[in-house]
Image 1 (tube, rainbow, N blue to C red):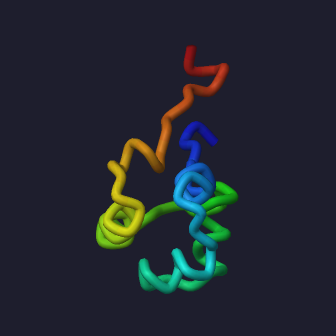
Image 2 (cartoon, helix red, strand yellow):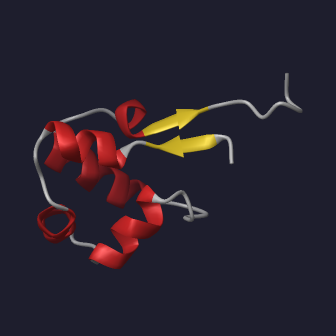
Amino acid sequence: MPIIVRIDVELARRKLSVGEFAERVGISPANVAVLKNGRAKAVRFSTLEAMCEVLECQPGDLLEWVPDAEDG
């Protein structure tokens, strides 16, 4: 998957648990796990906004595009 989700990096930098993060964002810990593990097919802008607000970061801090070998 060419989109890498870096929620775990931002959580570690802030010493924030998945449970606390999920509660503050308003999503379930299971959905945080789906996002962290790259299994999500989509993310709502409202959820992305809430994650950025809680982590005090930009969307680009959470998501990174990496081209597939076939793309380059």
